[in-house]
Each structure stands twice: as structure tokens, then as C-alpha cells.
Length: 408
Image (cartoon, rainbow, N blue to C red; front, side, top):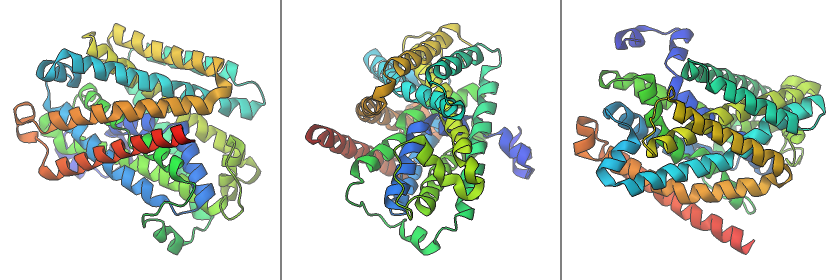
């Protein structure tokens, strides 16, 4: 879409057409883990932790914009640039690290997608896990995989926004209490969940992949404003969905002291809109979050590892698609074999994220602030300051997470 047409157009259709990479990043970040954590925080602590969503959205937006700038500036891929500028060892460390993180989260995505339909039809989740993993592989080998991926992500994000926005309005949230939730505080007993929410919502790995998505979409330097607009819009949508879920749970579940220990209990947050059908509709939302993240997460892991081994970075590359398929199959196998250990799998995934994210974040900052690489698109000092602050927060949270795990 030409930039002039972008500026003059105000139709929903034109707006949706440029969302691509930003929405994919949002969808791969917002999986069943984020949905569960946001629901548990709202149900357990009301509106008190809404500030965390705003904070993570700001940091995620900054790093995603850095990733977009990198993607639009480079002729080569980000991993190739790191390999040539900083050495092959670092590119391999990032490639393997991202692959391990995505593979570990993939089991949760597969379980979430399977659980949604298992609850709807009162069956075992195993056949559904296998079915949706197989469906993801079929989609992977379509000729226009990227376009299909975009449409699936936009559609599924749309389902979640509609369901939780209308629910939030009907639940009659207390505006004063909502406003107080923007003031930072950490209620006793919320520490581990807060760390988990920041780790899942502030995904530096997802921001890293934004550089690849921008290049896959074909954005050029003269389209920088459009590129930044769609990148920022995708992350704002991510923040909105998380905010609405936590606020809806705070409005509906918190006053009734309903704990969130199952998908059915999370579904009760939608009762003001859907009544007895709330659990069924929630399962559709759970499936949307899980399947979109299953596709996007696997694509991220496969693409970065393929590039680390110089196997190509375009989604049309067969070796790349093969590695994506390996991530999908790995997630399905672990989900089926260790279904009953889902919580431990999430802990392992978060621990890996805490190790890999700072390394990835450092290289995003190094590349985006390098004058030789970026030229006139080098990030400003303000970007650097916020980026460094974000990395410090991730490191502090990583230490806190390990301490809580070791001390119980």
C-alpha cells in the first residue's frame, strides 16, 4: 500500500491490510500461558496489577520498534548481520537459544489448543493435540503460508478482543478502582505470577523476530512510518487483550472469590455476556490464543535456527519449513507424553526465557544502535535508555524467579 494511500485511507479494511507482522508478533506472544496468568492475577488480586500490563506493553513496544527498524534497514537477515559483525558463535547461541525457548513453550500451546476442544466435546485432549498439530503442519506447506498466517492471526486476535471487550463493558468495572490499578504495587503472594506475566508479555524473542517478519512482508525504508505504525499497533493490541482479560477477571471473578485453577473457572469471567455459554465461548478464545501462538511460535523458532545455520530465512525455504515442523512435532510429543506435568513445562520454558532473553536483547540494542549497520535509522538515546532499563528488569526478574524456585 503506497504511503499516500495509507495516510488518506480511514477504512477498517485498509487498516487491517497493514497489520501483518505486528499482529503475528502479538499472537505468538499471547498464548495460553498469558491468558491463564492474566486471568489468575485478575481473579486473585482484582485491578491491583493492571500497571504491570501497561509497563510490559511499553517495553515490548520499544523493542518491537527496534526490531522493525532493524528489519527495514538491513539487506541481510538479523542473524546473518550478527554472525558477520560479532562472530558465528553468537549467532549459533541465539539460534539454539530461541529454538529451545520456542520448543519448550510449544507444548503449552499444543495442550491449550487440545484442551479447548476436549472441554467442548468432553473427550481426551490427546486426539485434538495431534489433530491441530497436524493441521498446523499442513498450513505450513501451503504456497502462500505467510498470507495465511497473517489472516489466521488477525481473525483469532479479533475473536479475543470482541469477547473480552464486551464482557468488560457488561461487567460494569469500577472506574476509580481501575485507575488505582495503574499505580504500581505488588500484593503479597503475587510475586511469581507477576514475574510470569512480564516474562510472557515482554517477549524480547518475539521482538527479535519482528525484524524477520518486516523483511518477509517486504517493507522498504521509504515505508518506515507504515512499518512502525503496524508494529506498534500489533503490540498495543497485545496489551489491550491482556488488560481486558485481567480487568474482566477482576470485575467478575474477584468479587466472588472464584479461584482460577481450571479453564472452566477462567470461562466464568465471560458470564455477563454469554451466560451459560460462557465456558464454551471461553474455550474458543483459549483455542484462538493457543493455535495462533502454536503457529507463530513454531515459525519463530524454526526461522531463527535455520538462519543461524545459513539455511535461509524466507518462509518459502524448505529447510526452514522443516525446522518449523520439528518445533510443532516436538511440542505435540511433549504435550502428549507429559500432559499431566503442564505446570513444570511452563516453569522450564520460563527459566529458559530468563536465560535467553537478555542475550537476545543485548544484540537487538547493539545492532539497532550501530551507526555503520543502521545509518540514519539508528535508534535514539531515549530508545537506548528504555531498552537498557528493560534488560535490567528482565535480569532482575530472572534472579528473582530462580530465587523463588530454589527457595520454594
